[in-house]
Length: 207
Image 1 (tube, rainbow, N blue to C red):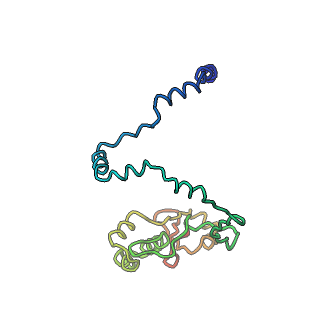
Image 2: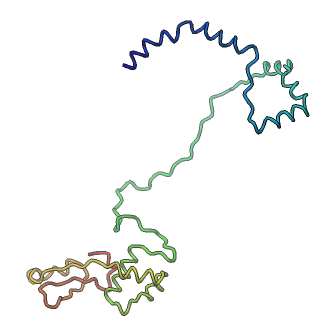
């Protein structure tokens, strides 16, 4: 609907457009109107015009010599256009598929003081769970350069995973413990299952 209305109204808008444009130009006169001044700058411009009227007169004067010099000016270009050279990007050294990181993302090469990586956190959490008396929060904070309060909170709210296996399964497959890696079996009192606890030698990254 809009396109139809626009198509019908276009001839009316363009009717006698040239004569109407001439009449609008004649109303403006020979000299175009000066743009209105900003109220704060108007007094400064008036003062400058009173102090230096020669500048206002000079800008209204046409300098024929300068116009002739501009007409004589000519620029010639020779040869092919210059090539734009971009900085070469280094190509990959290997196109082999990268293996997925163990913890899902790349680990930093340098860990600043007061920070820890997931690998280090898993390591001292596992050590603390294996031997709480030997790996206290104060010792961990000193070894990894961490705040002891933060270490206490990590040890309180984070633990490594434990895997519980039925005793009947272990009796049926005695070599199952070896296939699961370096783990210390802990028999649960009053139960018929065995809990695998990470040993102090492992880093605690495998469950």
